[in-house]
Image (cartoon, rainbow, N blue to C red):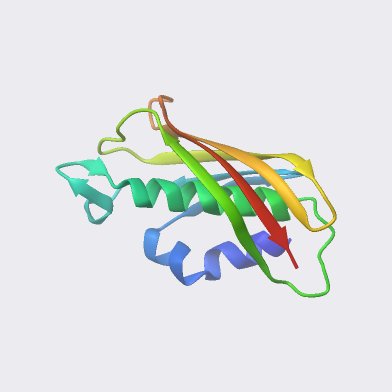
Length: 130
């Protein structure tokens, strides 16, 4: 699968430490292990790290189950993140699923939870393949 190869080799994903939880048809679960370097103040995980996790999960879900285009390129067209609660000193999990798949453009959502299962963010994104 394209994502099984891409995610571990992406420089940003490596920098953040994002790991694959699971990949399925039109869905992806990614994990961001907690590290003090990802915080903004005290033990609160920076919103940018949460947004990057959600964006990467949305991207992965959009690639999973898609027919690979001739050009293995893609980009986020739009991403909206709603922060619901602080993420404090906790591993985070983003579970994303495709809401609608077009020929090139897909719409997906991601839910980000902490290690206790509390929802800390919800994201909706649009992604273009190829």
